[in-house]
Amino acid sequence: MATMATRERLWNRNYCRVMAANFALFFAFYLLTPLLPLYLVERFEATKDVVGLVLSGYTLTALLARPFSGFLVDSFPRKRVLMVCFALFFIFFGGYLGASSLLLFTIVRTLHGAPFGALTVANSTMAIDVVPSSRRNEGIGYYGLSNNLAMAIAPTVAIYLYKATNNFELLFWLALLIAGLGLVVDAGVRTEKSKHQQPRAQREGVKWVSLDRFFLVRGWLLAVNMVFFGFCFGVMSNYLAIYSKEVMGITGGTGTWFLLLSMGLVASRLQGAKALREGKLVMNASEGVVISSVAYLVFVLFPNSFGYYASAILLGLGNGHMWPAFQNMIISMAHHNERGTANSTLLISWDVGIGLGVLVGGFAAELLGYGAAFWAVAAAQLAGMAIFMLRTRSFYEEKVESSKLKVQS
Image 1: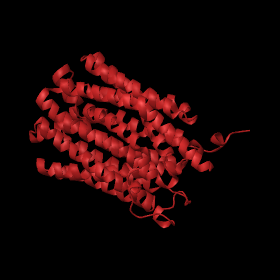
Image 2: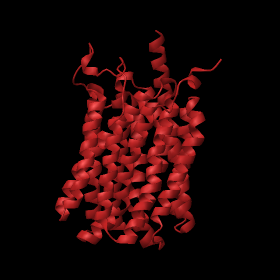
Image 3: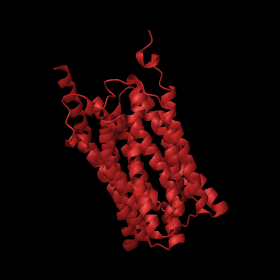
Image 4: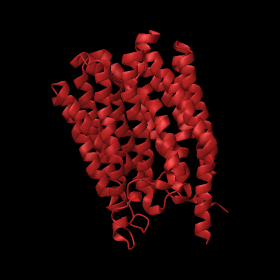
């Protein structure tokens, strides 16, 4: 007799649409991210610390939008919230084309972070809604492949186009077009109404304003862990191109680095799908945290081509195991009507880490050099690994067991 997991179809039309839209939004995002520091230096002659301040504004507003987006997604019709967020995300790409000064660019970039932060919460929550409940762990793991593929392709395309044309405006137009396509695709998603998808504000006994409407308090330690890991990736992803050029003497290798990173992400998500399907979340997360730690150590211990490219593959393998495991862990700690809040909580913590990484990394590089900045990254990753291994794993297992006992009683 076939099991429920094999009978229920994972790759349904709505799930594929949400995946495609997620690919589009992250493709548009990663098309600009690796070259923006270079654009700010060449176009506006910005210094390293100013570059850090300008780029951190995007992350800051994304961070501020996360808790409110979780609240909106759980309180109002999710499809409507999703469409509004995607439309705003699309419109702001046009602002880069009209930003003629560093101040205007900073304003546009900073404001753009808000719809991005809200959109990632809304779209990932929609993905959870449209995937069969018996295949949720696996579905969330595969959903991240759309991010990873975008990360693999977009930076490579961006760097190739920039080298061929030396035209940043072309990249801004392309990002605008792809974001528009994602908006159209998401508009075709159809959802069925159910008690789990019903807005919380429409049900009895639900308060409009309380802390758990904005942050999943039960998952606070997972969030703390994600701050450490986000900090490391924030420094790595934003200062990689400049570091590789100034310290390693590697020019034009950023696209290849991101490609290798994404290949590792894709490979680990595919390889880890079986473990997710079997509910081995803690095992997947542990493997990911350890492999990521090795990646950052290789990067700083071997400041050459070997360390540069090997770290990309290892970091992809590590994050590919860690991210879907952490996301499933925090969602399993949430009630059905808290999925948006659970998603936003995890993304908030990642954004806090990214923002700190961009800001602290810029100042550290200006004062001490990029070498010191990346050694701080390795130390932060090791600290995050220690917290996870010594406390977060048992914290999660205690919370889940406690929830099971409450349900049984």
